[in-house]
Length: 104
Image 1 (tube, rainbow, N blue to C red):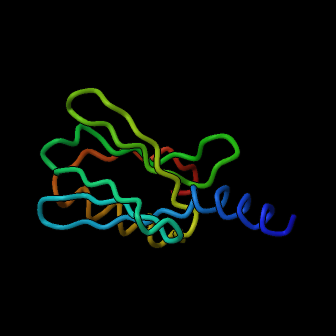
Image 2 (image 1 turned 180 degrees about the vertical axis):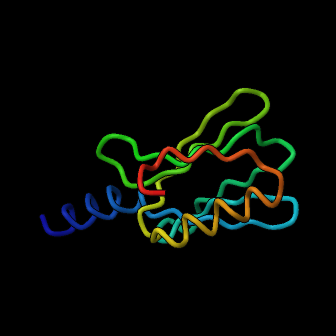
């Protein structure tokens, strides 16, 4: 029973523990617990990045690409200062950022 509970919480909380890396040409999303999970986007393929807080999830990044695909990536392990730094760095790279978090 305890292994089942540990596995359940590992899955539930692991989903929300993403972090974001930004290089000159790429935006990458990784996960703290699920180390095999990586999603990489070329900056020229990004139409918009939306910072939002969906219902019952932690603060998240919604990635919209130029081919109209949308993915949501919760970043529950990030503090407010990290969100602000990410927003500033994305804007400096020329990526359109829409910030829907109320306290920014």
